[in-house]
Length: 500
Image 1 (tube, rainbow, N blue to C red):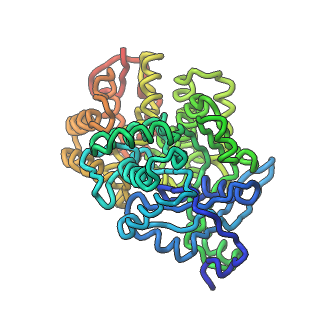
Image 2 (cartoon, rainbow, N blue to C red; image 1 turned 90 degrees about the vertical axis):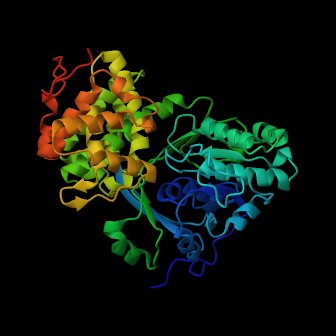
Image 3 (spheres, one colour; image 1 turned 180 degrees about the vertical axis):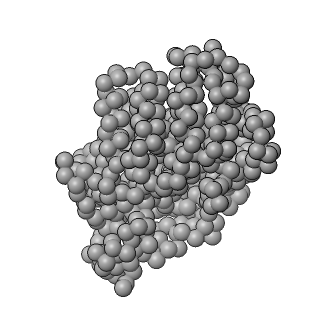
């Protein structure tokens, strides 16, 4: 069987390279690149994407062997009916491996047609690394890579204001565009790139805060053979997603003409303030994803659908949303519960196998941005700890031990984070005092940007949850949640805790 390429679809048009994309992963290909593909067909956008791999090596070669083409399967409920459909996406012109073809990356900065930058480097991607240098090829972190690229473009076009770019970061970080711009200006100062470049960044480039929403399980592992037979060609990059999608972009009104996704029928909104959209989605959908992952996986389940349909974990997830996440949000409760009901239906999508391990990438930074704000606001409002979120944090620490019974968990996170957890777990000897010390050290970890031990009762509460998970296993531990946080005060190893 022949592999997908332009040889199979010679009539697919090619477009000028208009978008630089950091990330070749499943989400961007099933979300942003799909929208660009539709815009090319339905509007006069007339642009293609150059994808660069922000970390690791090797994936771009396989994508280029397919001429940037891949198949997107959309599956789920649409207008009240179960619908499965697919299309070949042709919006990616090529991929660049930064580690082996950095010069090709820099040459793209000279392209006069380039207008957009899109990224999805996960919550751990938008950071400032003081060790990055302009002369590195490539730099380690994404903002440094983009700063080097923008500086090359500034020089190539002598600072022309018309050659600035529109930056649309898709990382699930609050004010992601503002933060990315802040780090770029910080690099400009540290690297002494000059006032002219700084002024060009400020005045010629547009950094938009964004919020994205689509469940994208990725490559259809369980049904790949069946789908390949249906397609009649091999596709190493086919990806599956739900029909639902939402992209909220906080940007100027003129952007609607330059990025005509809404004109193409997309659920893409360009608004003055995305805060309400983002908070609701990140806290409920993403927060539930991140909290459920270690709990359900350690229970022995592997997919989101299994987790929400299971009697024990499904009840845990629903109560987490209804009793802890929603009460901490200052929005109309009726709207929040309606959104939550839709989220649970999306989690149950019968067509999609959304693997918990695929959600677990960089879980520590995800918990920080998605769940920690809920925990802090719940404590402030209720003067007590949210028991299910506390349990999720204990489960997260257990998950980062890297074991599910006798099975190794393929943890994916920053090497520094993995090393830290490995060092902390070396302290564990099976006793509660060792768990207490382990938790105290982890809650003080710099990744949280604050000492979580200062939250009254949290250290003991997480230690209690973790000790139960490690001693009795997740199936027994989840049964004890109702017994925990019973409103009693205490600072001993008795299973009860309160912030009072």
